[in-house]
Length: 223
Image (tube, rainbow, N blue to C red; front, side, top):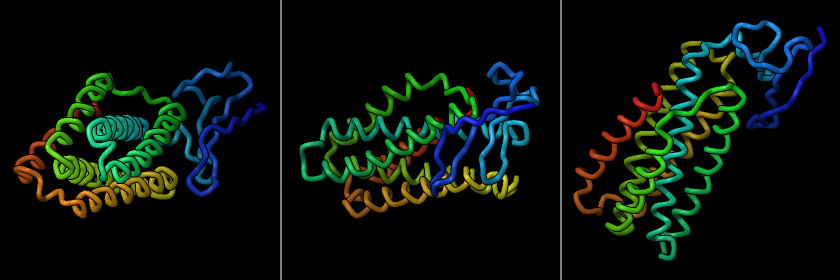
């Protein structure tokens, strides 16, 4: 059977992932079909040999998280964009845009549906970003610390899961998650360096935001 290889997503280090369609597949996705499969070029990971439910949850929730982070930074920039801290927030936001772009690509490549809660995260994320920014730059940075700490912990949990499953098979996905985890930790440290702990009721604010993050993660994985 002749196969057609269509490049879809560039790897982090110049590698590629491909979609393969068998000649008789009529370019339809089917998890049950042996004629149609997605594969990462370097590891041979396909839709047929992965833990699809687990990968679906990982990509869905990470896409939702990066979408929410983008909306938080949008809210912060709406309030603080013209202040001295604006360029700092913009730099972190630009990285979050890259994260979201990558997960948009993975959603298509792995045929993962987004969470139905995206419209809610759209509004809630912007409101959280703008609301904390109204407390001043310290409030915005406290929000950054709380959110990025939660996301980094979440990414670490996913890394452990994939390492236990098959680190070689999920090599590219692990590289992506590790890279983004490291950048979220950088954002966390930036927040601390910009006086996040001087925000009004810092401990209470951080705890409340992280409770919300955990709830968002739980829901976005499942619906």
